[in-house]
Length: 228
Image 1 (cartoon, rainbow, N blue to C red):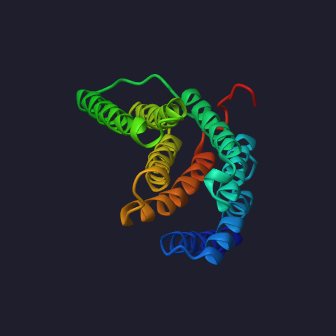
Image 2: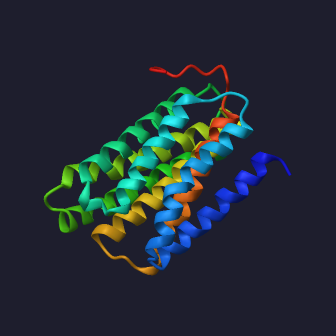
C-alpha cells in the first residue's frame, strides 16, 4: 500500500472520530480529531501531489484555524472565526470564477441550471425569514453568511454544467457539502440542535475538506489565479 493511501485511511479514521465525537458530544474525541484532521489531510495531499497548490493549502489552514477556534465555542471568538471562514470562502470563489470555460449548453443542462437556481433562491429566502427571529442584532452578517454559501454552490454548479473540467465536479461537491455543513452549524448554534443537524455538520464538513483537496489534485495546472 502506498504511503498516500495509508495517510488517506488515517484521515478517514480521524473523520469518523470527528463525526462520532460531534454527534455524541464527546469532548476528547472532538479535540483530538479536530487537532489532527486537516494536518493529516495536508500530509495526504503532500504525498499524492507532485507539486504544491499553495492557495488550497491556505484555504485548508484557514479552515483549520477556524476549527480550532470553534473548539472553545463560536461565541468565544466570533469575529476571528468569521474572518477565517470568510477568507477561505473568498479563495474558493477565486477557484470557481477562474475555472469557467466556454461550452455549449444543451436544453436539459439549461433546465438543470434553472432548477438549481430556483432551489437555491428558495433556500436563501426561506432561511432569510428566520434571521430576524434568531439573530436580530447581527442580521447583515447572517444574510451575507447564507448568501456567500448559496452563491458559491450556484457558481460551482454552473461551472460543472459547462463542462469546464473534472476538477469542477470536486469543487461543486465541496461547495454543496460546505452549504450543508455550515447551515447545519447555523441551525445548531441559533435555532434547533436536532439529530439531523448534529449529524450533518461533522459529516459534510469532512466531505467538504476532502473535496477541496481532490479539486487541487485535478485542477488545470495552467489556470492562473489572481493574487497568487
